[in-house]
Length: 395
Image 1 (cartoon, rainbow, N blue to C red):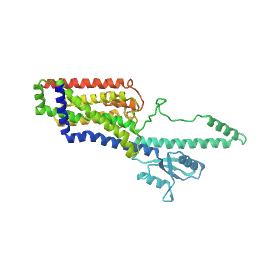
Image 2 (cartoon, one colour):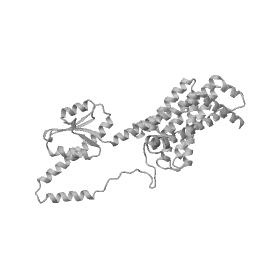
Image 3 (tube, rainbow, N blue to C red):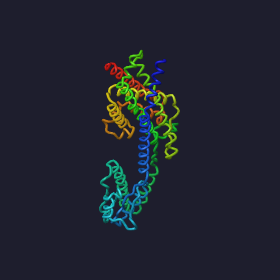
């Protein structure tokens, strides 16, 4: 026990003497969670606001006016008919959209003979497609209504009220469309950008310890302190175990820092929703310790394999970023290609994120996070075994 205490003291002294490393260790994930979360929140707000659409009509028909009214009442589009108190023409609409001042436009030809959607050529494909599909849906719906009105107008006078009454009664019988989340009946947690982002950055912050952890191992190997420790009656497993216990404390501090940002900083200073964690505190503790163990195992494995600080820093940081990307830290997994979604199932960062999502959003319990927790612990055992074998071969 005394040997372990001395090793822990040594590890904490090495850790706290590296002030620049500590700053990077804690500030890098903090800066990233601010940038990514605020950018996503701004993107969501822009999607919820109305999209301005240049509307140029060269027709005096009823269809043009009804389409304009339907766009205005859609709740997602804001038609613009005049610029600086001058009516928008087809050529002006093309110029405004081509220059990037507006992104979308609708041009109605003379006598409703043509309908043209004008699109900014610099738009991203996914955004362009979603907006153009919505515009097409409203246009087709207006055309369908106009066609029905034409059929009704051609009917004998005594039949038209009957048909219109039948249509109105059928529409009244249709059930309303209600949007809800597939959560538990008594759930009080509402999914939002905070609920989804904080778990990802908890894991990203934990795995970022690969740089100081691997660096300390390489320093001890290169400076000979590791060999001096080995000359004492101290086992290799005890040396690595001391490092593991030290960095578990660091991972817990990373977890607490992200929790403070999600529960206090974002709501207080940015008006974002507060992080809701549920009431499964034991399960949260188990998920956090398991994720910390996996991050420590990864750091020890990189430190054992690398020969220089440059190798460890480059490989460790790049690999953590790659794991974060494919695991859903920076963007949702479901929008990625199928083969990347498949690869992400082998990422320990995703196992940890899924555990937190099960607890923070789906309001799961200890049983629901058991598969991910077992995988994280198995990864820790595998990584530490690889580290021990690598160190033993180099002696």
